[in-house]
Image (cartoon, rainbow, N blue to C red; front, side):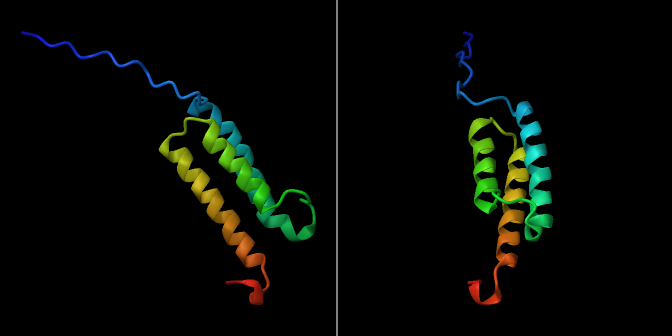
Length: 94
């Protein structure tokens, strides 16, 4: 007696393919690097920590990311948070 494997249809998530996320991640990564280096110059007004965090969250929620892409997002979030903490005055740090 042979058993046939039950056909399971591919999971439909509505997320965009991971391959398309790399361009977004590359852009955000470059901008976060620029932001963290030039934040005190006033050259990046209007783009604060919250903005870049939202952009990264949007990438995570829009694309079907692979593990390395998720690690990039976590690394970028860590960099933003670290920079935000270091930019606070010593009496403002918790």
